[in-house]
Amino acid sequence: MNLRQSMAGLHTWGGLLPSWLLYVIIFAGTVACFDKELNRWMRPALHEGVVSTQGADDVRDWLQRNVSEELHAFWMHGPTAREPYWRLGWEVDGTETFHNVAFDPRGARPEPMPETLGGDFFFKLHYNLHAGDVGMYIVGLAGMFMLVALVSGLIIHRRIFKDFFTLRPKANGQRAWLDAHNLFGVVGFPFHLILAYTGVAIFVASYMPAAVQVSYSGNVMQYFGEVMGSYHREELHQPAAAPRSLDALIAESRRLWDGAEVGWVSVHHPDDASAVVDVRRRDGSRIGTPQDTLTYDATTGELLNRQNASTGYRAYLWLAGLHMAQFGGSLVRLLYLLMGLCGCAMLVGGLQVWLAKREGRGDRSLVWVRALNASVFAGLPLASLALLWGNRLIPATFSERAIAEGWVFVGAWLLMALWAVLERRNARRLLRHQLLLGAVLALGLPLLNGLTADGHLLASLARGDWALASVDLFLIAVGLICLACARRFSAAPARAVVPGRANRVREA
Image (cartoon, rainbow, N blue to C red; front, top):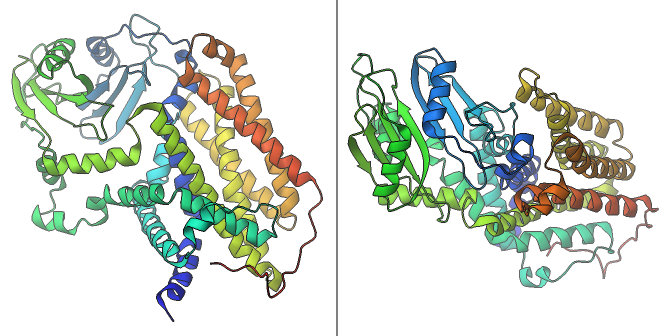
């Protein structure tokens, strides 16, 4: 057995076994490329394009008025072009419980906006499946499988450049799906290889913790502190004096950075005399923001430490920035979106090839594989659309609103899975109905948005707010594509052609 033959089996099973999980990861990551635009769409208070007049001191004053517990730390981020509002988070001392709130930019004083999962839901689904450290390890394992499948796929495809120009959608089922699998695999190969590698690499300290545990005697925080060069001051257990203005410290930081933008501002042990303020630099034009940090005494405003990220840490941040696509503007994020969709299509095509090769053998288990395909490949996008419907239909005053949105997503996905199981022997009819449902959900969302928010599509286009309008436009495009595909599947299926020896489909 030569290398290419040995790689064929590795590619088939190494790609098949995690394919459903990889689809969830890639789909969620693709949507997360525009997580901040989705955050705006899911918060009607942000649809009018109002510029916030609030400051960091206003945000701190709100925290002092509304949170009475002693805090371990709190952190905030000011408005940006993609997120035009203040965000605040805090941790109550001794609880390790984090709280977050976003403020309505329309008022002179900070007022929280209604809770929503926002685009962050897909970002967390992408990197840990909303399952904490266990989910992160599962995602890392799936990423390693993807690297194996990509490299082995490159080895077994001898005609990789020819396959790039070959797509025969009207050929018999297996040939058409193989062409699609090859095409989308070749188009996105460099992208998928880089994203799979960086996705695994940026969590390497979590996946391989032994060296850190031994070198730092289990003190992981000391390791991260040394790597990032962070400044720490022990608590004095004395009452804190009147704090220095955060807005003044932000202005001073901009001056020291020659006008550079400021990102996160955090205050550690704010109720103690040892309180310090960290002001972090932000640069959205670079691959990997530099994470340079200025640390001030929270009371006197004295500059205590100036942290410039080390060369090694900058290399790590570059890999993380390359993976997360928070650079280069909308054009780069659109490219990531298209390549991510190619990855999803590659997985669907590969699994359909596997099914087409075995459907003539009379294997009864294939109907369950098709049910799983329908549950994941169609169920996840439909559940995502249902989440957006839930965001619009759940009242703004509903308590635990974000949790309710999450249950809408989970409930919708479970219903899609049940539907797929019940219709497992009618795969074509099931797919047609799923496409019709997707068209209704996607085309209905811009209409629902216009009825429930001021930032409807025509208003967004009139004021040139393409970031907000792009969400509605994308939903319309998705709905029209679903309608076109449903129309194609409504036609009677063509009779299968039994290939002869001369024209039998080969994998390579």
